Image 1 (cartoon, helix red, strand yellow):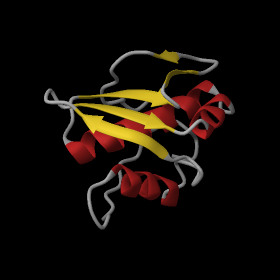
Image 2 (cartoon, helix red, strand yellow):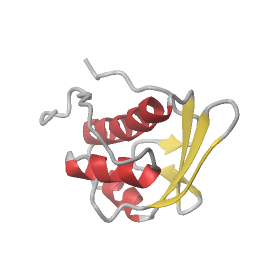
Image 3 (cartoon, one colour):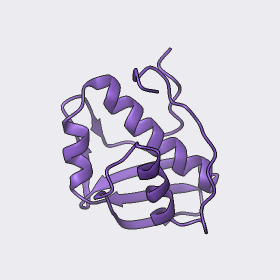
Length: 116
């Protein structure tokens, strides 16, 4: 939400299930910048997604406060986990572990709850 207190789930329709269409939906909802692109996507047999995004995602995350970062990361992770019915998500940026001013995302992320 606008006050960075809750992750709001809102169903959307996309032409087909693909990382690019998911990223476009997140852009349309104001979660991501349209310049953030998917470098690679893979889901293993255990249901863990490995998502590698372009470097400008790191710039976006690093420009936010801790609440904004939590909401953006949670929105991204929750959307992919829900769309693919996945068990976890490993996020990379240009092939490297994402490091922000608030966290090092070197683990398999699961659903983010709302902050409340």
